[in-house]
Amino acid sequence: MSSKRTKRLATLKRRNMIGGILSESSLKELEAQKRLGGSCCAFFRLGDDQKFLILSHKKPELKNFQRFIVIMIGVSTSELGEASEIVAELKGNINDIYSSQDFHPTVALYFISKYLKRIIEEFFSPRALAVDFVIFDPFSGVLHTVKYNGDYETHATGGETDGIFAISGAYNSKMRKELAKEAQKCLDGGDISDKRLEKLGKKIGKKYGLTMLAVMNAQVVNVLPKQN
Amino acid sequence: MRKEVFEAALKSTIPESATLSGINLQTSSGRSKPVWDAKLKYKEPLESGTTVLAFYFKNGLVLAGDRQTSGWFTIISQESVKVHQVGFHAGFMFAGMVSDGQAVVKSLQRVDQDFIERFGVPLSLDGKANFLCRFMRLHYDYGIFLEAWGIIAGLNYNPPTFEIYSVEPTGAKMASNDFATTGSGMEKAESELERFKGKIIARSLEETEAVELAVRAIYMAGKKDMGTSDVRLAVPVVAIITLKEGFRFVNQTEVQKVRDKLIEEERRKGNVV
Image (cartoon, rainbow over all chains, first blue to last red; front, side, top):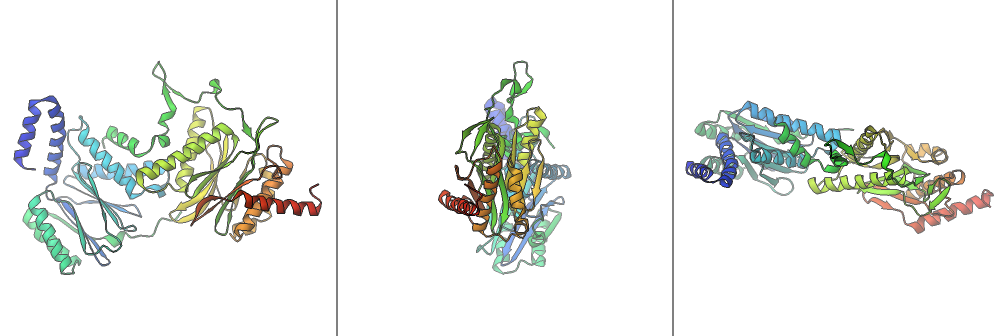
């Protein structure tokens, strides 16, 4: 995200057409990354405790689909609204064609990734959607994180894996390093209580100017499966 | 929301087979035209007077069908298999036009495969039934309805419950708590199943009892219905769906034994010469 790289891409764009189109999408990505900056969502698991720590400029969007949750982190209300709308619209489409039972985390992941990739690739979209998605399925213990450019990662959080953390967002490398260090400290100390995470969040948030802090228990979404 | 992007992404998320966009062809004038055109008369003139049935037993579901395919007053085949697997825990049977039924079966199998390959999870029975209804309904809207009266039965995954749905060419879907039958011999089979309705609802039939009942129902239908095969000439096809094993066909020799036992019993009673 360095300004050097941005300048180099801009020069490439000016020099030839092919490079121009390619760098167009790269610039879109960089611009989205820049806007997201330090906004992040960190997942912690220690024993039976599963927590989310969210640091951002805007209040994150949360959607609960009975079997899994989708957390959206962004920097503008309109983009968060768009993200929330596409997830809801997708659910409606799946309900229409198949059934409500068939809206799985993998379906959401597949679609969101495609949508974000297409926005980047599409010539007529002036900006990328600067929103990071976190899809968490507490039943199978799988955590998917989708980046603003459609790239995604899948983490296994259930079973025997213990004392782990996963970070989505935090594109400020300095902050990311610091957050990871602090997160590891929390896990080593065996304490991921709300107070401890709040303290961590406040410390990092104050340093990097992130005004919105949320600590969320992942188990609160662990509701019973929907009855037929 | 960026509508074009959403639609393009959705198109890649939901398989072509489900959105049915593939059934439209662009004509030279640029207007879309359905592939299945009544004037073309592509359909095979095979109309299967059939008896197919599904009901609940202790561990799951029993699906059974006769073996005859007829065209008007001619028997085309005595070896047709009318029970089809359309998922690990799902089966589909149909009566009516053979070509239409086969198209529906292929489509159901394809949509299930697509879903597993894309998302790594199987499509639920509700999903398959809704897709099937939509498939039927869309064809009905084109004015050329698929002449397939179907029964789709299997397992829903959330929560795990067995379900039986009857589907009609107009797109109607009806859930059944006891049994479902369709085809020209359905009334005779139904009256046989009706005698055990209490046990079916209570899910107290053992597997062997359930297979016997299925064969007997097909036998009763074949006795009076012209479109249903006689079990003495063609052994019916019986399949079982259970939670552990999924869909499996009951071995033909086992069904044959049940059939022989039934015929012997009938002979003793003097019902069969």
